Image 1 (tube, rainbow, N blue to C red):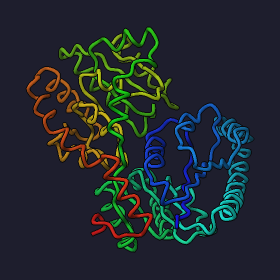
Image 2 (image 1 turned 90 degrees about the vertical axis):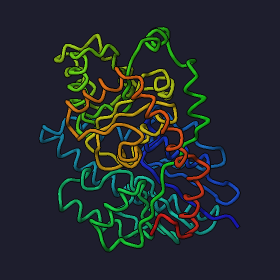
Image 3 (image 1 turned 60 degrees about the vertical axis):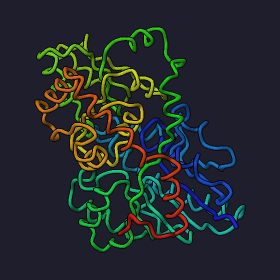
Image 4 (image 1 turned 30 degrees about the vertical axis):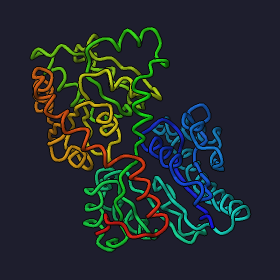
Length: 405
């Protein structure tokens, strides 16, 4: 008999978490589960992954696009007291709306498939009200370093109390699992480690597909460049360090350009950083794309400068494309992915001089690149979809994992 599985997440917009969500949905065994997908935000044209949700999965959106736009309007103007009041009022109404709508959707799913066996909260967005939802088991996935993301002790404490409402907590790397159990000792025995799944064939096929490039991009991709792929967020992704490190490398003879693939709230700020550094001709903002892999494949190497992460999917995707990675040793993920520096280069968070030295060493010494390239293929095998999905299904089916020791 099939299990009734409900997966909940925040959006189907462009992002690393959303890509992994789709990979999971595409690989779970439809013969074992009736899968329903609850998405909090209906983002209209921004639902770039909507078409990739497998047929047969029922999709339920909670918040309409108009409500999202209205809240966003007031959030952008929060410095004004009126807009701050309206934003807080709308957020309060949104919470009640989402809770009630989620209950209604679960009732609808129950009528169709029977009692919900597993409610899987994929981005922890239901943590404040999960105890109000009816399901036999409740699982939450953690994709980021909790202390780095939340920062304030009061928020960290409250977050732990919310996690305790779930039957199982899943961390996406060993470092994160250890971090959670250290911060919240009462969660020991409830935390599993499951890596993100990656479809190697799809990534490699897309890495050779230039059909989505316009004429200007087809010219850009012929150039010699290094690449960064992430949301344009100066706080988490620390683009200041990346730009300073790259500038120093250029001053010391590096000729390759830096391409940045992605979009986000801090694009203007990053454009200003590039201008202030006098690097307008050397740093190119490629923008948002559903196929970053073709840019990865044609690059010299991949660079990442985050202050914190969960398990940064782009590092693994770059390695699948055969690229050597130089990354900040931020919590959590890069150290584990790169095997402590055996399968890539690590530098201390914010150390732009070390980043620059790493770039110069790799770009000026082909033998250094080759040394790391030899370790990449074996390292990334642990992230293959067919291997990881078995662990996903083990968690859903409540089978103890070897990673829960």
